[in-house]
Amino acid sequence: MPRWKALSDELDPQVREFAGQLRRLVDRRGLSIAAVADRTGYSRTSWERYLSGRLLAPRGAIVALAEATGTDQAHLTTMWELAERAWSRSETGPDVTVQPARISRARAALPLVPQQPPRPGGPVGGGRRLAVLLAGAVGTLLVLVGAALLAGAGR
Image (cartoon, rainbow, N blue to C red):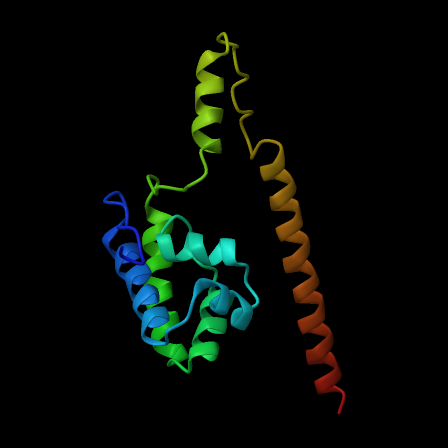
C-alpha cells in the first residue's frame, strides 16, 4: 500500500510540485508525519493537510521543516513562494474555504434591494476614513522630517 494518496488533479501544477517535494523530503529522511510534527512544532493534522495538498503550509512551517531535516532553507522557501502565488491565484483548490461561495449564494437568494449610488465628490464610508488616515500619516511624516531638518540646521 503506497504511503501517500494521489494529489488532486484540481491542484495548480506549482502547488502539486511543492507538495510532492515536501513528500519526497519527508520520505528521504524516513520521517513519519508524527515525527515531522514533533520536530517542527506544527500539528500532525496540519502536516497531513500540507502533505496532501489540501492546505498550503505557512512559511514558518516550511522554515521549521528545513531546519528539522537539514535541508537548504533558501531553496525550500523559494519553492514555497512560487506555490503560495499559485495558491493565491487559484480559487478552486480542494480545501479552499467555501465561505466566499456561501456568501455569494446567500446574496443571490436575497430579494433585490435598491442600493444607494455612491456620493459624488469622494470615497464612500471606509474609503473616506482611509483617505483621512493616510492624509494624517503623511502630515505627521512631514512634521517629523521638518523637525529633523531644523534640528540639523541649528548645529
